[in-house]
Amino acid sequence: MPTVLVVKGWRLFFYANEGNEPIHIHARNGGTECKFWLKVDVFDIEEAWSHAMTPR
Image (cartoon, rainbow, N blue to C red; front, side, top):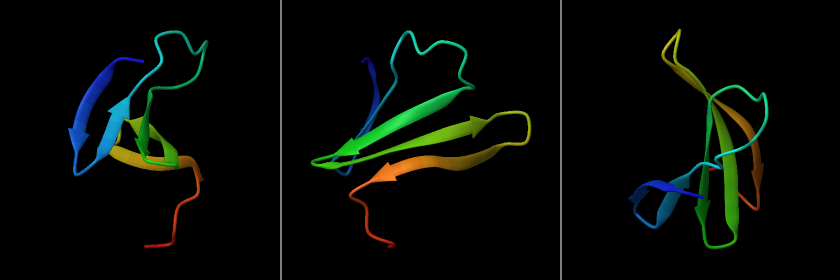
């Protein structure tokens, strides 16, 4: 799980071998974790899933 960036306690990382999934990044802060699809062709980010996150 190489770390890409750490910002305000959030660790952004990726797994080296996740099969044929589109480009994405994982983020974790304590017990909170989420995954975002990175749509580079339209310069957009979309939440794939989240765990233990508040609506804020």
